[in-house]
Image 1 (cartoon, rainbow, N blue to C red):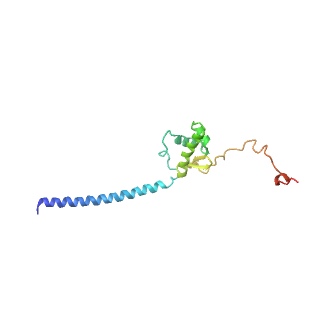
Image 2: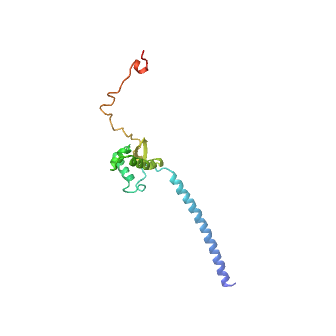
Image 3: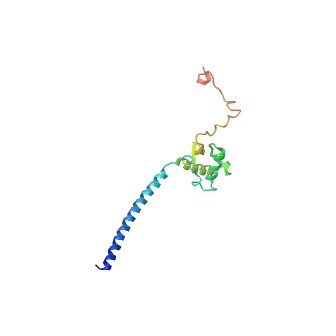
Length: 154
């Protein structure tokens, strides 16, 4: 047998083996991509670090740091004040929209009421649980009794 023919057969065998390996790599790569996409759909677990999610120095990172210091959920206006931003309609809409996106995905923040946000790690702590009602709470409120309460004015 001719040496040239032997080399051509060896080359052909190696090419077939390489094609089979490439097909196996492609199959495994597709499976890996599917796993990564499935992982993105799951909410992050409590205690998982959020530092890699939020860009350092961003308003979101500042809001996280502010909420971390407070240890409880607060209204978006208080968050804006806490991060040194003017409390106006545009800033409220922008920050609450961004925080709300994370909250819906179950990442970093959660929403405990209208425009009230906290950190997932502080979930369960009410926005107002540490606050006492004001001293004048209920004073001056009309209390209807008897005929006035029922609407009977006879």
